[in-house]
Length: 229
Image (tube, rainbow, N blue to C red; front, side):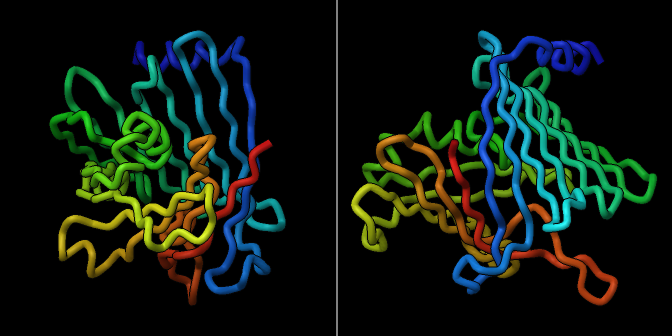
């Protein structure tokens, strides 16, 4: 509880900046917008708050992700699936990763040992930047990706696809599950990074929001594009 209160107080006097983005329907040539994205990033000394908000084109909130960092280290991550009324939390404390997920008013919990290559969606960019030279040189980065609703981590490999790069200053990166079983369920995700600024420009693959099809929420693979201000 003390950590949560402390992190909340961190936001009072932050210097901040933001960007916007869009999730497009796959294969629509960026013509059909499925979700609008707002990114909020706030800093104060060694503390950082990061939020990503997804909304339908009419403004209806879909998903909100929030992350709190100290010295570039993730301390807490939360996700709110507004339309499904589900919430997840990941807390890093005392060398362990604590997961909690609330669905239909029922909470489930789990924990596992923390490892240095642990990431969630909102901490991926920091991991990439910390290992930038390795990635540019063609090295493979292995990570444990936290999945809120599973209450555990999943192994992924991240590596550059230099032979697939079409633009001079854009680096193409592929992220795929390490497990054959997970790979059968989740397609690889393909990212584009600016080689000069190290910023993520876009990616194709699984997104955080889902789509409702015949009264059921289905995983969504789309094209996500960021517009840096």
